[in-house]
Image (cartoon, rainbow, N blue to C red; front, side, top):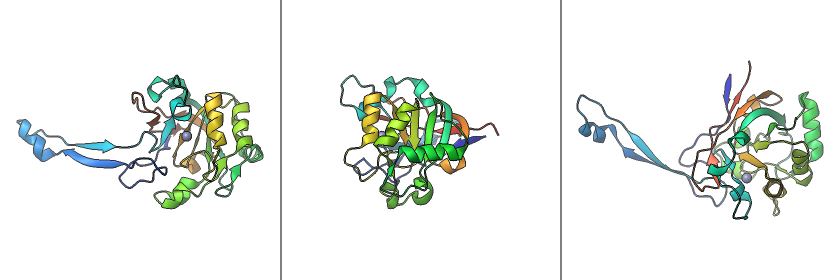
Length: 228
Ligand SMILES: [Zn+2]
């Protein structure tokens, strides 16, 4: 079974405060293109504009790190975006507070599973389930504090992801999770969806970003592939 972990992309979708909004426009219509062919064929297309960190996406190292050698999304190793996945439940942690190492220990114990080195760790905050398509989606969620960020690093997690606009606490001014990612060269997915469907499960995660040359994030169709 394949579970879709991606949010819809549409005009009016919520984007992180300050990011450019998503725009769709009709480009070619069946009516117009029918004139180019004989025998009845026609096609239609849309034009789309979005922020490279707008939809469900994975951050590039260049997004997190001002070092001019930090990789843009098209330069990153595809192995970061595919592998053994696990999802833990932190949906009880209150909005605008820090998720701690203790929370992650407890979530792991409750799952009956063990986070292994090389895993892609998804954290179900419940933000998308509660607030999809609403303004509250942009501010009412918890974030990984310093101890939880160190926990992720110490456990050898390859890549991680959240179902909220950022893994940091939205009221934080220091963004300890993004700083950990900068220093340790670990990246993460933001704006995932449907994590309630994979919570406390193991699966194969696949979330390959669009190959946008020089971009600082890659919109992604992220999925979990479950054995049953
Ligand atoms: Zn990020």
